[in-house]
Length: 118
Length: 116
View 1 (cartoon, one colour):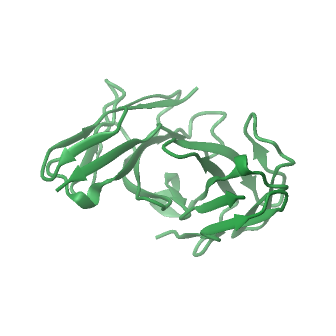
View 2 (tube, rainbow over the protein chains, first blue to last red; view 1 turned 120 degrees about the horizontal axis):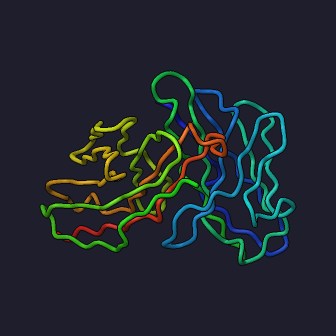
View 3 (tube, rainbow over the protein chains, first blue to last red; view 1 turned 90 degrees about the vertical axis):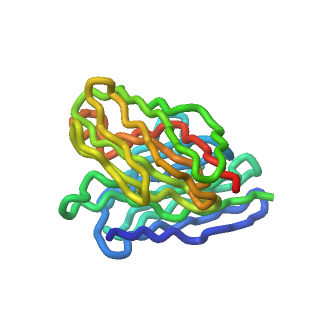
């Protein structure tokens, strides 16, 4: 089945630095990927839709300049948290939809990236 | 717009107890319905799905039936195990929605703890 790899799984950084998280579809091409943020004991908050070869579509209230998304190829989307602050600490999860065959409606999720900003 | 309402947690059960987690939805089109499970420190995994009315999704002893008349997709398991302790998310994907663009709508998640 479809596999989505997310890296790094955990990252700790100093306040003011930038952190890049990668999301890769390993065995399928994904023209669209989704980035979520999950707070402790909370549901997933969709941050943005990453579109291959074009600009990402951000949800209302999500700062575009803070959370930079690049989808340069059909198998890779990156989320860069710029000038990170402690309030950006969270669990970030990506997902992609494999449009091959019967599973077209199913989202495949990465394992998530735990960001801690000191 | 589309929405998913899930039973509030946390839910604590003893091993071998019967589990029900309620889920209801609203959608503009004919959605597909899903249950995802998230184990501690991990991403979400698809547990089961149903793509049309009266379909029953099942996996690992869990079941859910797509009920269009009650707009529900309740998750059930006859005998839970300690290893079932996780957060469960109900979700829908509505390809008929003009604003969907491939998105899915998630419930708030229900935390299940199973004690030995």
